[in-house]
Image 1 (cartoon, rainbow, N blue to C red):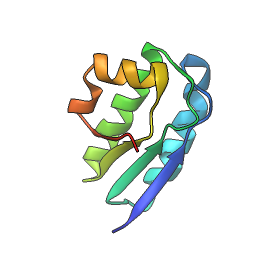
Image 2: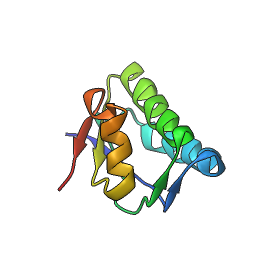
Image 3: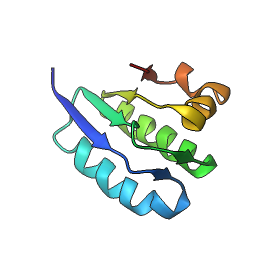
Image 4: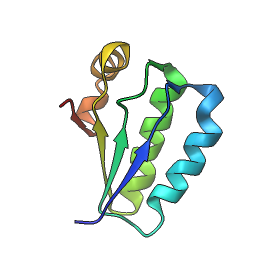
Length: 94
């Protein structure tokens, strides 16, 4: 299975959107079957960050690519669950 991984830094917010966009473009290059977004280092995420995840999912789906969010924790995990993002894309907590 063809997988690419996007590793995120400690913040997923408006300030990080350009970096996220660049990483997303690179990660989707070559049309992987699965895009893994490693969130294990993310300590803070706001509504802009949620929007970026949803955008990543939308762009991936346009390429027949599935998105998996890997290891969100703490406040970030709470936001993902409260916003029901885990209903839109696969979330792996281990």
